[in-house]
Image 1 (tube, helix red, strand yellow):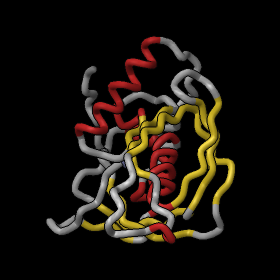
Image 2 (cartoon, protein in one colour):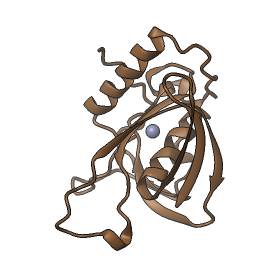
Image 3 (cartoon, protein in one colour):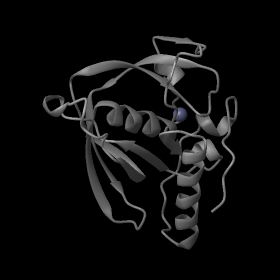
Amino acid sequence: MTLRQIVHLPEPILRRKAKPVTKFDKDLQTLIDDMVETMREAPGVGLAAPQINLPMQLAVIEYAEDEDEEEENEDAPPKPKKLFVLINTEITKVSEEKIMGVEGCLSIPGLIGEVERHEAIQVKALNRHGQPVKHKVAGWLARIFQHEIDHLNGVLFTDKATRVWKPSEEDDTELD
Ligand code: ZN
């Protein structure tokens, strides 16, 4: 596997709309594996193809699904991380409820910001083999999905943030 270089603002590709993936060949499998590796190495919780200079509707996300609030238990082991590969993703449903949260981005080093996102969303996409999949996600995972899908449309969190600032050492924000 090869680490890919993550591009930063003002790289123009970050502002372009990505194109649908049409070929599910060996090269795509290699690219996906490279993106997963690059995301883990960064480290980040999500990475979209435009962030490695490719205008493709492809993103990888790795994060644990949110706990059910009722089940929340300090002694419970943390939920395992889950890897999502999203290709040609479309948001099919969004919750009316929106929540604020602090986000950062691997392509915008040194800035974090407060962004309002839908609390839950549903998407349809293709998996790495081109088969249709549906995902229903909530909480922080839904936030990461929305952040990555924005990347595929040339939208960055700073476009939507109500305020942005330089993180201090205490800020422990996961980047995507
Ligand atoms: Zn990002």
